Image 1: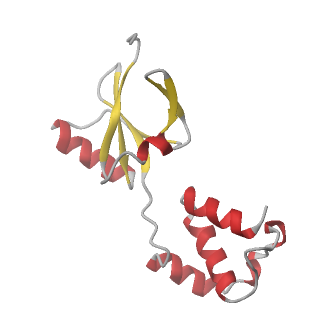
Image 2: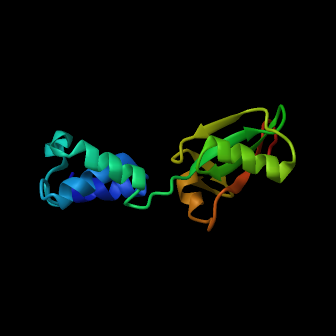
Length: 143
């Protein structure tokens, strides 16, 4: 895999730290987009510069995950949010009660929707702002 492909994957999958490392190494001329990614040595990066870049979010990452918030014994709400705390706060505002629990799910988890299958990552593209309610699941309910 080329550095270019790895960098694109970092942007697609919101791998902020690695993307900032690659950005730094590219800017310093220590790697090129056409190098084989297996030859990347992150030890050649200036750790302090990269840490500052990550902290100031030079690449503009706005991480959004998907959280399952338990409404009752059988029902769950799925909420896109930047953190577990934000998901819980949004749930509280939306439903005027506290969820029983909150767990983050992988964005690549696929679910059935209509006659097809979609991942939370693909579904996220349908929303313009976050936090947002992605949907509901009721255990034992047959559609």
